[in-house]
Image (tube, rainbow, N blue to C red; front, side, top):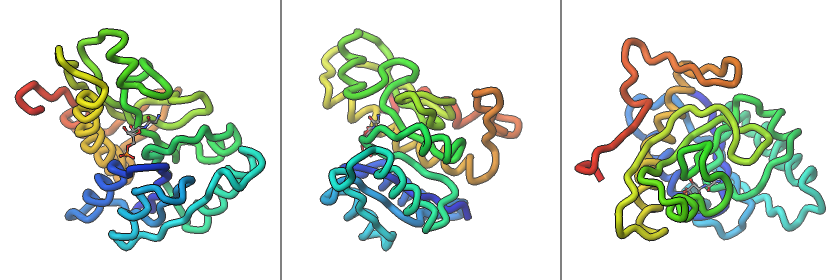
Length: 217
Ligand code: GAR
């Protein structure tokens, strides 16, 4: 079982998707710790309800990003985490931290990267007038929302969408691809070669590229 730690700042619906997947049959990863920088994050309650160890590391109590990231690093090593999942973790991580967890640190972002990095990705997509939006899971590199992409899911932007309706449609796909990526990594099928992800999917690419049809939404 791959030992996974999840870092979050808020609602924790992606954590919930990972918890639900990990409680299913034959999921090859286990969530050993959930860390939040926000003391009252809803995600902490979800973890506690699932019997998962939680730690609060309040960034406001640290005088620098370096000290905060050192505390994170210590808490991750203390639980022997082998993979770290950012799931709505709204802090920028230092280069030292990111490099210390090279290829063992993944993030989910609500856009088809490399488009629409940073905050309010769904609103950025609406403002740009794109017809297709989506989400990405990628290995983390020091630049914000940068790094080799493991999986993406596409969703249509509908004529009457607002930020909330588009975000909800994307979120449903986030909950599909994040557990998928954790499973693939835990199965040892994911490799980074020359900053591109290579996935050993046997003789099929099903499940890697998700293009749900309108009928599925
Ligand atoms: C998700 O939509 C996630 O993709 C996004 O925050 C939300 C967290 O929701 N992350 C980012 O924008 C990171 N740049 P959740 O707390 O319910 O999982």
